[in-house]
Every structure is written in structure tokens, then in C-alpha cells.
View 1 (tube, rainbow, N blue to C red):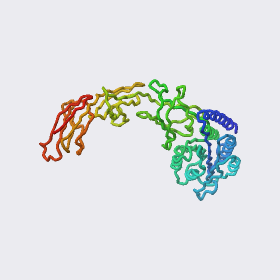
View 2 (cartoon, rainbow, N blue to C red):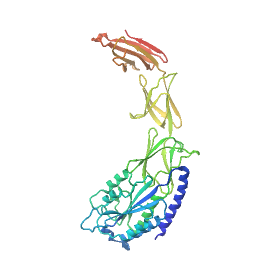
View 3 (spheres, helix red, strand yellow):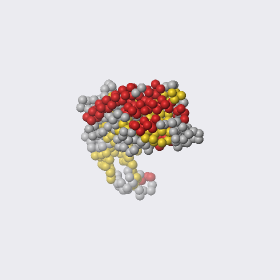
View 4 (cartoon, rainbow, N blue to C red):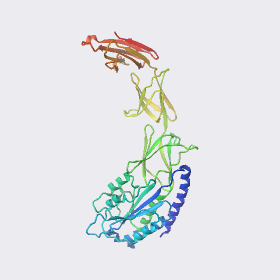
Length: 461
């Protein structure tokens, strides 16, 4: 019976050596993490039920003991054992019946085997409380992967919420998403929200579940992120990427995408096969890929479509003005980015609307961004309006638009008498009334014209 476990762990060990060599080449200052596996064992009274040719408890004890035997010889692994339902008989119901029987430590496999052998099912099933107390079973560690493997033949019987407890502790980073093996009846509905659930209706399925769990927990895994251009080639790079834990929403890692010296995406070793990720590529607009699952013991490729081109807003002549430019997706009012005149900025291929904060503002709609091409938008060189008011008062500038109507584009501060404004070429009016004037007919209007690169003096009397 032990052959499958021994073969699997030998493969894991060899794969781990290969991974160590690779990591040492790419991350010389980083050590491999310590894998800490907490076995949570159900010893409630129902484990005495028959299961194929023996009782559930006898089969579970035998298979777990064999797994502990094999893991004892694997480097970078420590084990611990928590048991529930074994201290108090049912009835009455004791919902505090859970205990860490063997804590983490080196060379403790013999204690775990001895403890497993002596377990006698007695009580109830306080799974939520057990998970909550397991948070204290993992001593502080800066470089550890905390893994829970829960073996149970029943659901919560003490009114707790295992899903809520598991989510809370995962979010705090106490342990990775737990592995749960349900013995006998299928409890997927109760445990899918707790962790990665495996249903074992037979002893063979139990063995298969353990094989998959150990594979996912320990096998060396690498990955790369391919940022694809329009032709599907991984040529895009130098973009920040955030990885979130899909289950908790927590930020797991943040990187700037890199191509190595050969022009290939760099290999990543920090993504954990025991987690599911959401990835956000911070292009403009961002690209999101949810529920990324890594295959254990393999090199995983994560692809995202990120074809990019550029936008640049320039002046038709020499100009020193620096205008903000709001960029939106065509037809949308959501601001994607604010760049400035004279700057090049990358965007995903597509169509965009620009709002240039000149005086007056200029709207340029449906600008197309193409792969590896900078779309240049040219606007007129501004002129300068040098305005001098005769006194403090209320002054505004109105623009004559294409329809021959006027619209407000600038209002002076009440206490400002002299101001120079960078303005787009065109025809304007300035309208003014002194603060000291109490009647409307004392208002003054004056027409003026702005030309590119020319300073126009406006003197009101």
C-alpha cells in the first residue's frame, strides 16, 4: 500500500532538488520555504462506521500513518497533528473537544504515528472551533507555507461556521486554502467554501485524494506571464502586475513584468500552487484575468492580451504650454488617464476620446491606437492674452464658437487686475463691470483676437 506514496514523494523530492537549483540561479539570496502540514483528524463517533472492508477510522488511521512515514524523509517539511471528537463521549455534546496532540517540530513523525494509533472515536464534530484554534498551532515564521489537511466524515455539528472561520484565517495569512477530504458521504456543499474539497467514497478515492493533495502542496512549480501583442506574441513588457488571492482578495505579490536577455518572459517561482490567483496587468486600461489555477510540478504559462500603442499630443508650432490631457475610452465618461502635452503614453489598442485642458478646452474624439504605433494629435500653438483691468471687479472671457454663439471659458478672480493667459487662436470677448459700479449699464465689453505665438494686449478703460 505504501508504494504509491513512496514513489510520489521520491518524485517530489527529485523535483524539489531541480527547483532548488533553478531558484538558486535566479534568487541566490532566497531560501526555500518550510512546508508546515497540520493534519486535522476527525475522531468523532461516526468514524466507527463500516467503510468497504473495515471501519472508517481504521482505514483513515492506516493511510495517514503511511503518509506520515513517507513525509518524514522529505526535506523542508514539518508536520503536526490536531484531533477533534476524541476526548469526550457523545452524548452529551462537547463542542470544545479539539486539541493539538503533536505540535510542529523536527523529527516528530514517531509521535504522530503513536498518537494516531491510540485515537479512539468518541464525540462530536466541532469543525469551526477546530479551525479557529488551529490558528495558534503555527508558530511565527518568516518563510513558511502553512498547510491544513482536514480528514472528516461529517459536517459541522456545533453551530459554528467553518467557511467563515477559514476565510477569516486565510485572509490573515495564517494558512493557505485548506485541503479537505470527505470520507463516505459527499459534503462538497458544506466544504467547498472552506477549502479545496475532495470526496472519498472509497478507499481508492481516499488514496487518490491524498496523492493529489501532496502533489499540490509540495511539488516544485514555476510560471511565466506572457503579455501578448496583436499577433499573439509575448512581446509586451515593463508593465506592473498585481496578483490577488482569488479566495481572500488579499494582494499576494506585485511585480514589473520583465523579458530576460533572450527576449522571453522571466520565470517566476513565487506563485504558490496551493493558491488561486486573480491577476491585474496595469496597462491603460487594465487587463484582468481571474481564477488562475497552477498545475503542480509543471511550468505554467499565464497569458493576457495586452497589445499596446501610444498617444502623443503636440503643438502645431513652438510652444511652452503644458496642458493636461484627459483620456477616456470612446463613448465613455470614465477617466482612464491624465497625460500632458508633449508626452507619449501607452494604451491598449482601440479608440479613445481626448479632452485637452487648454483655454478653451479641446475635445478630440475617436482617436485610434494601433499596435506599436504612436498616434500623434496636433493642436494649434497658443497665443497669449495680456489683460489689464481698470479696477477690481467682475470680468469674464467669452468664446465665439462655430455656431456664432458665445460661451464662458474663463472667469477672473475678483481681486485680480492683471493676468496673462495662454489661449487657443480664435475670437473672444471680455466683459467687465467694476466692483464700485452698482448699475448694469456700467458693464464694458471688448472684442479681441488671439493668434498663434502672438501676445495680444487687452486694456480696458
